[in-house]
Image 1 (tube, rainbow, N blue to C red):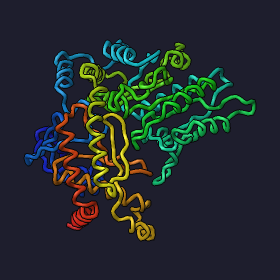
Image 2: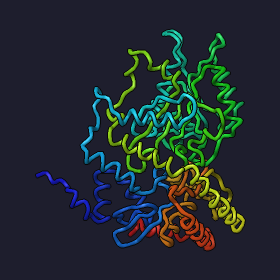
Image 3: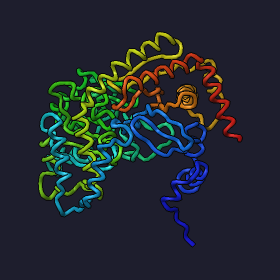
Image 4: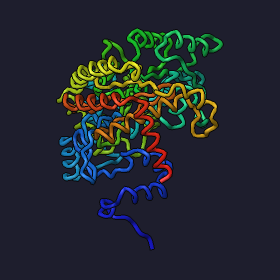
Length: 481
């Protein structure tokens, strides 16, 4: 007899029962990894604002910003009210042959907030899908005739654009951990280096001297390493693309909607326009699974303007009613509460306090990076002397033994923050660099930042060697218990 779990039964599941379900039906390796950390052994029952609440009564300050999703915090009351109103009125969710006022209004509002003629939007579900849609649009727009199409797209060496086959192909240099199939006709340049881009464009010219590159994609603020492009590079890239007829795509899936101190990072540079910009994360207000790519009128017209091309790019959940209504309210809150200004104000608190910690612990903190409310620090491993030994250890799970020490150090600090100070922090990892994220939701107040910094101070005061050793001992114990 089939036994289905009801909602009431789900509410009463223990963490051990959830582990068992994950192991049998989701992903057993997730249980193996996450259960080693304290938060992976807690059962959470609700979330509100800056806090998570466990079934055993603990209040955890969430300082992760939901990995970019929770600029509005957990369960913002206006977001909940907008979704409830939509449901109570029994609004129509989706129908491809009926016009949606919610989809139309969302496109309108985005166009009002973005500069220039960035007017045409499409709404997939994830950031990776938004990037795929942007690539497809740029490729279609590059056709001048059936026998005159361009083949190549260029991306940066540290890029992260998603984990699909296409977006994975253009996410930095080839993945080191597993060689998935790769999209053809791609090449990379050095992030922030205009001469590197120009060299690649020149190398890929056709025999007649014309360009064979249809698009260049870049993250103006690279979230995985908290690294911004310079204004000189971005303006130079725009000029190069104009001269060569190349579509310029800005990926602001993570950095968009205010967290770096401007609505979108590129908008801090006057007159700078991409041909397409992608967005997601906090765009959905923490409750809606929605992303977007928004294109300038000209490139959209070349790609999908003719009636025989109008429906080349569609998806089942494009324009899902309640998702659009949620995003509409999320954007309205961003405007009403001035999220870019909030991010700048948070940055004015966070940056000096992180610099004070760097001065206090120069051997433990190597570097600070970031913009606005999106900041990070790079920690020095306390066991540098062990790197030579680790390189000689044939442990299959540790393929990059040097970065393993850095990851372990940062993970140990995150674990200590949670276990001893009731703060959930997170790790930013881009293969070549591992960072402790200092990226709160934009609803954070001064007292939240001060609590985070004071707690981090106490962790560093213990000494990283002691913190990492304790973490390693507890992790090993959890593996054998």
